[in-house]
Structure formats: C-alpha cells, structure tokens
Length: 71
Image (cartoon, rainbow, N blue to C red; front, side, top):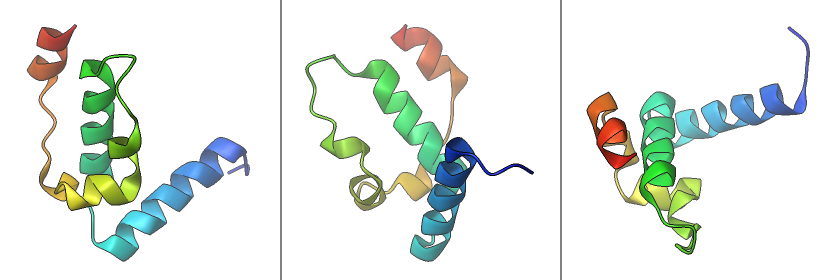
C-alpha cells in the first residue's frame, strides 16, 4: 500500500475513532448525511470529529432512503 495524504487522513480518522470508542463507518455516514442535507451557509462546527462524537455519532445508522429524500 502506498502512503498518500488521503490514506494518511483515513488512517488517522480510523485510529482516532478507535481511541474514542466510535465506529468509524457510522461516524463517516453521519458526517456525509449532514453534508448532504445542510445549507451552504450552515456553520461546519458540527462536522468536527469531537462534536460528532458528542452528538452520539457512534449510534448513527446509514439509511440510503434518507439521502434520496434529501436530494
């Protein structure tokens, strides 16, 4: 596997999630769902890892129907 900025970022995110006892897949699904449904003028603070963890991102579930209805 080649080391690239993208690989390093994903590895860092996964390791941070492990330290915080957060499911990385659930976290990413939660963040992506928030990005899709937000307005361009909404602040991005809630997308930061520690704010998502506080909002119980570990309990998030991915539902493709929510993305389709938001589009």
